[in-house]
Image 1 (cartoon, rainbow, N blue to C red):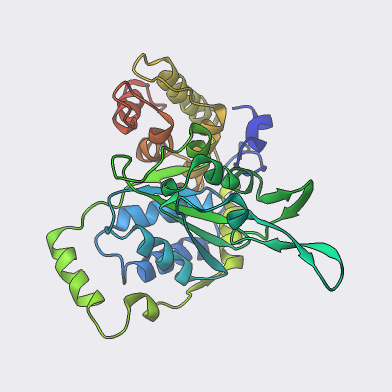
Image 2: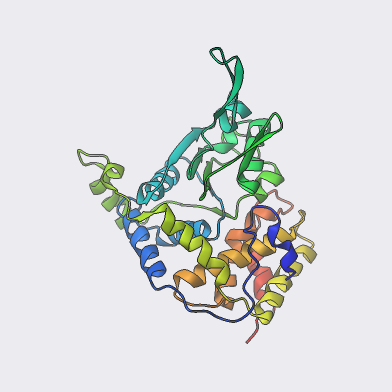
Length: 331
């Protein structure tokens, strides 16, 4: 993979590690398990979804949850934010929401007779964009720059966001009344699209025990790591080794998807980088200093599925999984 592509989109600017494995700070996998255990106190039976959210965070990616209302998408985002000692803000997307309500605007100061920039809710460490597809595309576009560049430009002036910045969005099924389709450019800003789904019977029974108490379940969560720990994750991910054979394998997977006649949408080189970064994060939290074939097979549907469109207008998780199986894996 050409390292010059590493600055594309919202991918981190550091080149993907190619010089050989380096030791992993053993505190990082321990921090991962600590956060996951904290989230599992209120999100039951969804360990794989929780893990994927944390992998994306470590890879500096944003996550989109697409599911029916009421399965815990917003609760999961809040539980993550409550587990990290950092700032958190929520935007409830509605049809009348304006772009300036998201990014901020210049407000005239009567006392000083000047315009002052009033930051919008995107100026935070963890942003929950709730029901993002209830707002029209014009408002959704307010997130494009901030998700890709971690900055906001208002009337020619650029305002940088503090690190880390993670956007966690939820969306309702498009067949629901009052929803808008997300533009392809918006979808491409999300590293992963995940589905929480319904809990298992035992987990749902346990959920009643947790959430029917006198105190709201989220109120019992306290931070177990700091935002500097998250920055440490994000700094460690690019140091995970991606061998020449794995880089060629990643490219072959993407080429197989692009050449599949069932895929009606282009899949950009940014997708290759994001898949590689997500695989590095999975390896990091597994205590492994290199990316494996299993990382790619596990994460390809989550990272690439929403970037693929089939003739029935569905997302392409199954198509991606089939393409990955067709590509010969390195030994």
